[in-house]
Length: 267
Image (cartoon, rainbow, N blue to C red; front, side):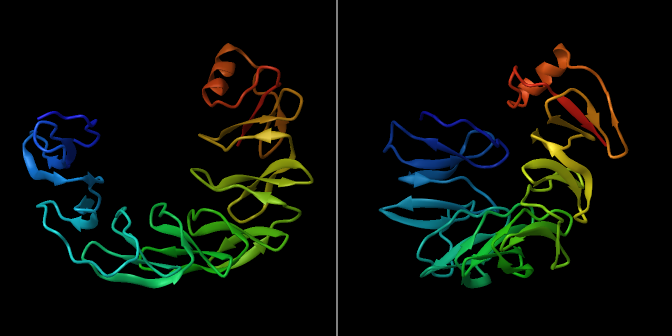
């Protein structure tokens, strides 16, 4: 037996290649013992206790004993991710759970991958957001939509950009682009070709004046406006001049170009 795959999650089954037998794929446990014999021509990785495998030119789902699972009909089979998988009927997509139950009947043109418990969906060229139960938490009525963060996202209706909270849209004054929220209750947005920051309620907290910025992390964010300095939510002040460690930090972020002058935003 020869193994040729990196074992990324040793506590869960891994795929292995039995070159001295029939060249097929199977699964081993953390001890290196065969848990599921190598009888498959292709396999994916286990997620939610289920894996997609191919045998005799047919794809199907198996559990951790190798038993084939009966799932609702789908024109294409998708991997399970964090408790759900897509099903497709015609040009519509829905959701199933690991029990083989239909969580959401196929009704959307597009369902993006879930980020946490939420996913962006598209119908009739309009975007919204659903949770893992299939419930729409943001109606499909937006031309663009962001990620879902603390029951909040951003969206675009026509030329208007705004914040969506509790399924209600609030336009952000003058914004012509908004970036996703991540680890902070603040994100960057653009107005008149300059970038500033808005809070989770859609209020400008740092006026747009920068040519380039990046997201806040631990209350700091890099920014460039052609001069050194620091902009806080209260005032403009000089935090520190660029130094070797600062250059190294930004270079690790794969953002800084050495001909730029950099400042740091402090909240």
